[in-house]
Length: 353
Image (cartoon, rainbow, N blue to C red):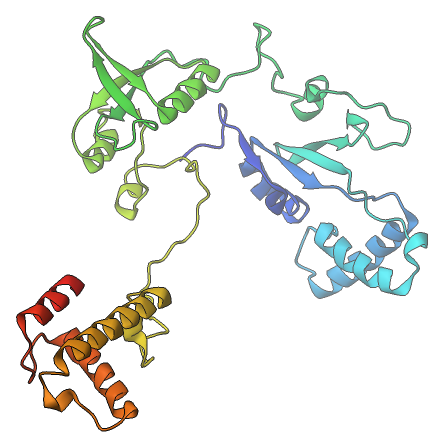
């Protein structure tokens, strides 16, 4: 893609820069324009020099064909872990955790400057060094050939030579106007673009000193993405969902929310095999209220019907109580059953239900 030459700058993390010591000069020359933070460790101690000598002997013995045989941070961390188990921690000078190394790939190697907490930036790590408060003062150390500043006295801009006005498509069918809003202003006779996404994009383009023309887009989001491939737009600013199909045509910036994996799976209820599951529609208080009203309804029916119906006249009190509960249960599911109920009792049941 030819994106590692002039006009491009790549910022790398220590996951990559910590391995620069093991890359040969031919490969590292292809990484021109990479700037990153490299983990720093002390190399001027007697312990490290002793470890370095032994590491060279062992590495050359095991890998004689390899040219790069310098120990890196990972070898040092492994060595320190073993040494800390053997020696007293207070007698062992630990790796400085407040110093980082900033590297820039130049030619077949890389240049370095250092940043130390409380001291700032410096070209060397010394106890009495007064560092610079800004990395601007050390530009020549990182960029000995390229100018640190442009002739106008302003920081170099990757798009300062671009005179083309970018066409940016903005969808007008967003469901959330807080993110993207496209409305037509009758007085100005032009579209007005607003929303969080539009404001972020506008601020980014302003800082890059790049002009752009926002264009309303009324078709689907898939067609909006395809319009970039068809050269109708140079970019798109909107609430466009990142999908596999769309990712084949364009590159997306990082979303505003944290990326991750989400899954929708069916949930199996733990109550599916419980015998009292039918009680779940109502609360316990509601069931007690239903039981009380039903029992009261059965008692009223028994009180009215017992003088007219011999089947409701039991020989003892226990039988009478059983009849009351039977009437209550029967009245809950049927109005008649096998009973001959007078009109007044129908009114009782009607009032209850």
